Length: 243
Image 1 (cartoon, rainbow, N blue to C red):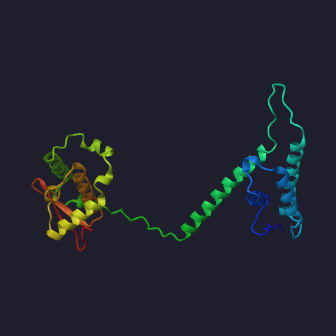
Image 2: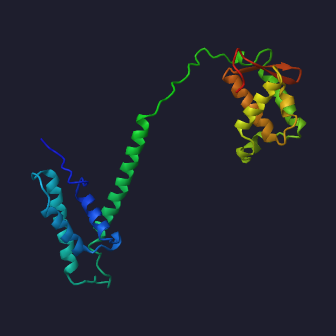
Image 3: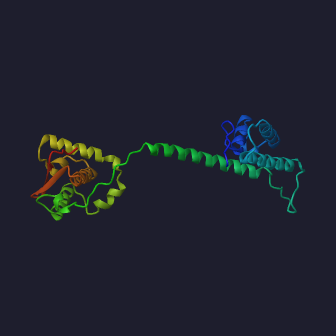
């Protein structure tokens, strides 16, 4: 039967290396290998507990560090092209940097898992019996489109208005503002007019945002709308309000 031994707050040799480097305030990219090896061997000497797989990992790391230390003690050699040999510590540095990155990611995943445990999700609404025909009473899609186009023409909006919407920041007039505009209209009248709501609009994005918000409220079955000539009249649906 295998066990994972955690020595203090360390779960493996790489954790110990990181802690030793931190205590010595070493630069990871310029490790004092002789000091690190001595500290690591001293840590192993004071480890307590049965000899198991985890302890073998520490011994393997100690052997690896001793190999690097011995290579550092050898005189520097150059290749035939005059280039210096690779720093023996380079591989160790790569391992440490990668381990730190993976440890940070693991910590992030743990935090996300904890937040996920406390999350509550709303089930998908059943739209199997949804009827597009009932969205608009006493009217049709063409009449609704005509009314919208008339509102745009009233404010000198050209045919490319829809394309230009993508270039206009939504922060200029938010859906929250549009929703409040509709609520104010219902407070003033039981059946407000779309044209009256946009009569004092300062920009085309305001008109479009109010129109889209109105359609969203219709889809949510909070309000209904009907044609009245070239205008659009809104009314509460059932006992719901426009908020």
